[in-house]
Length: 543
Ligand SMILES: *[C@@H]1O[C@H](CO)[C@@H](O)[C@H](O)[C@H]1NC(C)=O
Ligand SMILES: *[C@@H]1O[C@H](CO)[C@@H](O)[C@H](O)[C@H]1NC(C)=O
Ligand SMILES: *[C@@H]1O[C@H](CO)[C@@H](O)[C@H](O)[C@H]1NC(C)=O
Ligand SMILES: *[C@@H]1O[C@H](CO)[C@@H](O)[C@H](O)[C@H]1NC(C)=O
Ligand SMILES: *[C@@H]1O[C@H](CO)[C@@H](O)[C@H](O)[C@H]1NC(C)=O
Ligand SMILES: *[C@@H]1O[C@H](CO)[C@@H](O)[C@H](O)[C@H]1NC(C)=O
Ligand SMILES: *[C@@H]1O[C@H](CO)[C@@H](O)[C@H](O)[C@H]1NC(C)=O
Image (cartoon, rainbow, N blue to C red; front, side, top):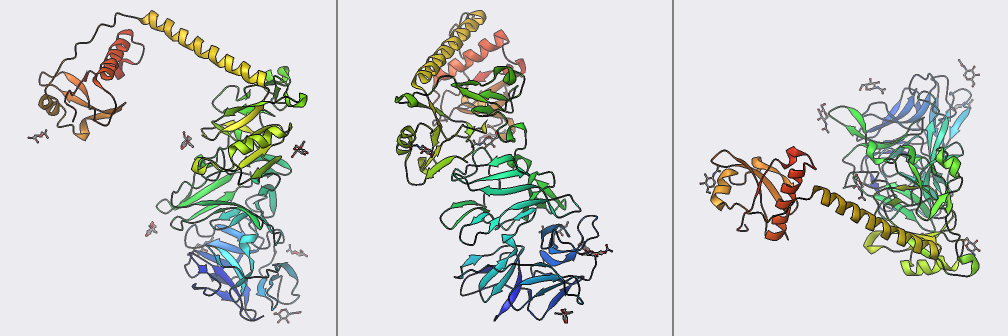
């Protein structure tokens, strides 16, 4: 093979079919890497060589950080076939296969890269930390296709449907043992693809479905606005990838305990910082904790309840906090009797799992509903993509599982019997009515004659003076319709000044109402006194 080289691609390396504008450190078929030798990427960020992770005495060949977080492992070749001597050698044979042999005498191969037969070379952008075997400009093998416990920017998680490579993320057994542990994060290909974090065969947590912007019910994994995430579903491949932003050194790490930790390197502390907010790990993130048709809210006690229109399947168990049996429709669906069901639209939830789903990128929501109505086993529908007002169709054909309450704005349309929908609507009206009459009662309890307030009037110059010309130092906060300043009148009285701008739609009447309300509440001491120990004054001339 001509021009066969092994490359440790680093920082910002970028290649196309024609050019490969990258400074590389290479290994040719005549060269060897012995234990103790390293290849350092010329940006200095990564190094390739033999090492022993943690307290282990075994020797592994892999890629580690060098410039930052010196020694932190990024990738290991022989993760489950370690060497117990320092006589290991890495070589590239003339067929383009990378081999680790135990020593130069017996040449026992303990690991080798498989060669993938890619027919057409592809233009590709390669990022940090990728170990690549390349013929000319053609990649014939890359370590990014065989991730370990670390996911680097630019790496894909998911399946190449042409080569069959399934890029999964597998934890170590423990900090000293790099062999495959109990946790795997991988793309589940049933229905609309979603990402599973599994503990053995147990589905632990679910990331998805992807809504065009992020995984439903999950803040963006990468909080940095300059980076983008990609979720690609087409006939050739299905993957998730963090695309750009090389200004931050970051990695995603799957701990031996199964925690998915997005980490950023913080230079001034010289430590990795976990962005905990980006991957919620609470009781509600456990897959299906509330059973079918149950919904989880971490702020409630108990955390599980049935979705509206559903009731506990086994009330005794449910009452005792065993939620796995979940809920069942309160009213059987009409569809089976040849009648049409309806849908209840719910927002504010992380959408359910999509293992038994069907999807179409081109349908709109109306077509989606029609499609769902056609089949009695269709339990719900939603848009696939929330961008530009929503598009695409996602249909579910199974019990709704793994819903949690989350401030998503996307609507999920859940199939219910018409009579149940009517019942829910009436119940809602009754609730509103009850609330209104409760508030009215409270009102009459607290009621005082609400005489018209005689607003004291001050000149603009007095107000300006009292607030040091509306200086920022005097600003107390931002009320509804405008900022509020603290002022001191010449006689020493403290006042609060609310500034109304022309663009605020609050008129004098609304303002008077606000003052009246504040006065009234203060009289009733219904809310904190300190908050109300202010007086408002109007700036009659709008500025
Ligand atoms: C960290 O860097 C120092 C010198 O730069 C080196 O001697 C040491 O071996 C490195 N540690 C690891 C764990 O690679
Ligand atoms: C190293 O491993 C080889 C083969 O796995 C084994 O025969 C040998 O006893 C081991 N040596 C030590 C010192 O553990
Ligand atoms: C082992 O490989 C080295 C380098 O390729 C070679 O020089 C040596 O002859 C080989 N030894 C055996 C026993 O094949
Ligand atoms: C990182 O911090 C060190 C000092 O701790 C400083 O010398 C270096 O310039 C910093 N690097 C960056 C990229 O900010
Ligand atoms: C309804 O959908 C399910 C799941 O996709 C399918 O197996 C079944 O054949 C469909 N039934 C009808 C009547 O189309
Ligand atoms: C949901 O709430 C969190 C914190 O309350 C906030 O950071 C996030 O932006 C909200 N997401 C949406 C989609 O509103
Ligand atoms: C407020 O503005 C007026 C006129 O611009 C100026 O004369 C006065 O000194 C200012 N007062 C303060 C406290 O900044």
